Length: 353
Length: 248
Image (cartoon, rainbow over all chains, first blue to last red; front, side, top):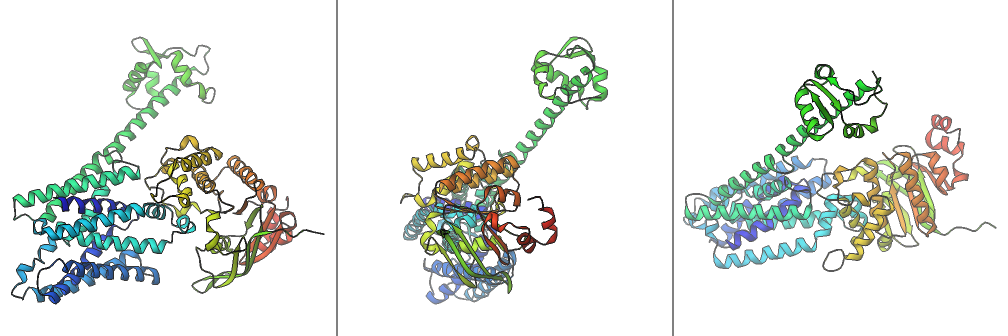
């Protein structure tokens, strides 16, 4: 569980920058790029070892280098470059995997578990290595925090400060490659990118502040990872990776709908604003009627107001009555109050028939 | 005898090309210290390219660039840059104050956290551009003119000696433009050098004491009154602009 939390924390933090730098697909590409390296190192070592993840890191870094070179020195767009790299590396990895599956001790290697993750296969000494690496990555992110967020926000300004964008890109890709490789045990090659993307995406729906975004992203990532690991541990036939991904996806969808920046909040705010506009228009209609009258507080029949008003005249009049802008001394007659007149002062003589 | 001014920025024979298409060709540029200098020219004339080359954001094919008699690398701590607005991600989760605080980057200590003094300077910079009331507002909830003003505040927070501004008045109303130009003149009296890419020839004549007309190469550089002649404007922009500016 400790290893899970640490890996989730690193993913949550780095994922925020991945999201803000609009490089969400890079995580998926690098994850798939780890496969050939893992397979090659297994074929060389001929036994299950934590060192095969080193092969994954090397392979992912190679993929990152290729992506950097293709986007910097050719006219190819980022999504095309990612598509080529992902398919090439994963295809190559699958080719090596077919060799490994014919070996007698292939099942014990546990390589297939890296496809979808299984946190229960992490040994104690591996946990120590993961913990140290995660702490190292966290320390690096905190030390490089200003460079990362300034270059993400404004590349040209950061360059003028001496923060070279290419240097930041390289450092970021290295951090990403290492983080993804560390996450393979937890979520697997196929789904690790969702851990990078979903948690920050969910957090983004709740805040417009970068620090709170980081904290929420880490919290969501940890909740999903810990719950998924726990469920997977009590039901061994359920893979960890898909369980974590389903939980974090549910959190994300919930946030997209109910978050402060989410759809429902925006819908309610828009309806409120439209209603306020209708109320304001109704008040101005009173002004329109009263323009040629000496008495600004003269009463008017509701039918006259409804004739030039919008729909739901009754509802709007009742709302304005509650707020004290209009009065209803008798049945169908309505008029402005002193408070209503004061509210309409900026509009003075602007409205005319 | 005319006293030769000390130049804060000197560019000689600068050539920049994108995909073998020259954007700047053998261009010279020099801005005196403690001056308000305008770089003026048509669209695609190389004004922004000149600025970015001076700042090391673009590598020129040829030419020499010196800032305070030294290279940019050694002087970048005394330089502030206000880039064009469209280079920024406006959906970034950041407030106005945090943007201005970025200007204090070079003063960060080993903890990489801004100190109280840095925050005071950032707030003071916001007050100078009349944006202190918006300190906690998200940058996406600002008008174009307000956005430009926070970039200016960020540059002020850097406490630099030389300020480079790339079209800082795009989308700004005339009143705000005048307010900012008065602020820049105030900086000039403090001994700062301000170099601005600007389009409005009337404002240039009114506020700027040194002007460089650029169209692929330099057309004229010098005191504004001597440089902004109808002949020079026609050479830089073409005949139609000359007719429009006859009332200068």
